[in-house]
Image 1 (cartoon, rainbow, N blue to C red):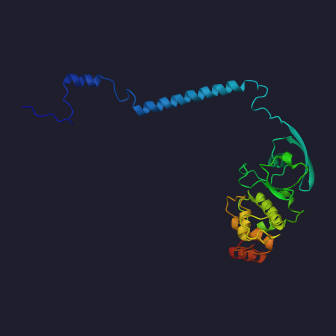
Image 2 (cartoon, one colour; image 1 turned 60 degrees about the vertical axis):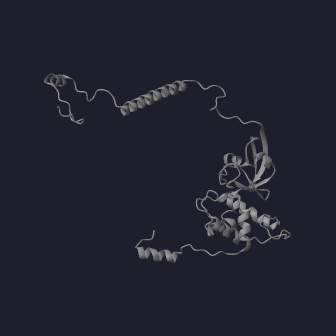
Image 3 (tube, rainbow, N blue to C red; image 1 turned 90 degrees about the horizontal axis):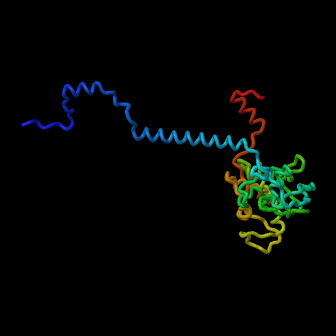
Length: 273
């Protein structure tokens, strides 16, 4: 009885079969694996797509621009002439009726202190003061400011003298990146004027008071429309409170004076510049 064949053992070849196998070309490189085939197919397709896209771009580049093409300069429509007093100086402009105050200040008057954050009236970075009241300049049409007084962050300081609110923000480190700071300061300045006029807020306890002493809670509520992504709110509230009431908040840091600086340099062996 023949022995059973081992399934894993190689089959025995005759002498003729062995000779035929030796004479056949190597089969190692014949055919493609599925993975290699897919890689080559994808690479070829991408190459053809890139060549086709490049050809289209070169063809478009040779074309002459049509009149009124989308990349042509935009033409203003419904031009409106207006005169407004910006930081104490009368400015005359002719703008598209759709232009908002923020764009007029930044692009036409070069007052780039007011920032464009969300451009939807939610972050408060664009806050300026119009006729003594804070407004969101990204939502305010420039045409509606005809004859009005506009105060931006650039108009608060007097020559080299900072506005008290600006100085307080520096003292209490009421900013980090500084992007929202112009809107924060303008809002804070107008906020104190609102309090002096006796305007109430959602957390005002006594609505009959003609002028009120603001608590930290009231300041936070009134400033809630100004968002600080860096989270410098404690310093902002402390700065506003000091300007409002003279109440100084405890600081955990202070500026280094010249004597301290000299001592540190001596200890570290640093020569004075």
